[in-house]
Image (cartoon, one colour):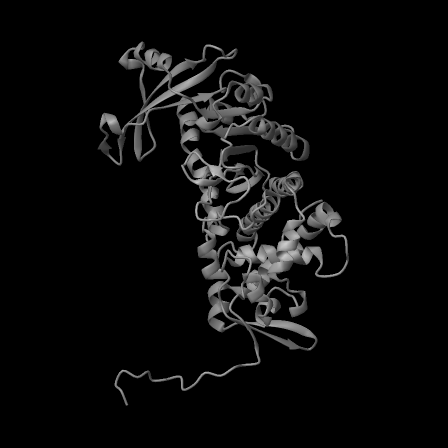
Length: 461
């Protein structure tokens, strides 16, 4: 006997007839989807695309698509063929083997969609947004609008793929973010920059009207943007909607001359505990503009306690209508009104915009950048299914996994902790029962998660 042999060695490997799965965490997620009433919302929007009652029900197809994203094992549609043969996977998502769809069925399903179906998917996404607004009841709604580059360099030619500003060929959807979730999106080709056409201004107008109509008319709304949306028409439209905007401006020659005029004593200092900036308030108005806004020229001085060289100091200009339009703060409390009028808080709000872009990274970790189809229409539907699935993943973390998985955890972490554990499915007394080990039960508090996913807050249609 070798001294390095294990004390409990495996002698042989055999086949078991037990129904086993390595994705035990999909069961609570599937139950969560059915309890929040997401399927009636999807059927009400897309029930007309099924011309025949044969085959797998439409809501079940959507369920398997969401599980495909949540599982995250593979980005290839052929993975549906693998799990179709896996009785354990089917049992984990509360399906029979006959109800599992193949990759060919999924391709036919997405092949039905055209680019015009994007507006229907957006309404579903907006409905989910209002659902969470009504649950969380925020007094202020801060929204960030930005584009996300989807790198398709390695994929075969796709309709709509173009060279983006990051020098990568791909798509560049316009997305609106609230509280770590993507609440509205327009799937677009890679050549379309952030402020292409009227898409951005129409999205902002539409969302402001939706919030005030479906949530509260007296809510304070804040729109945050980077320099990709530097446009007089956007600023003017937002200001006319009586909404706050905090945006990145452009440093023209007249801006550089203006910051040389004040005395050194007029410059003030802002310290966030990690980095120090000098800032100066100026009047910001381009020559062709009708309105004048407040501008804050910021100049970084030190970072992490170390002084920065001049060439390593990226100066920025922040533009806002705070202090120029009294109506945008009329629904705020006195304390919040005083808060928003302080220059330091405006600068802080602009600097926080970087954290608001983390959902872009989260979406790519949850799904993937390369689209599977050649035509733009099926890729549009696939993209929106991914975005809706990501939204439901975020609410699942908040409603069910809270206290077990950090709310800030990316999908990869959540999958390894709360999805990828072994389970056994048995049938006893006319019931299907999912069995896990005691270590999994105690470590993930499966009994508590199961109770939570039985009664989550439902979507009000």
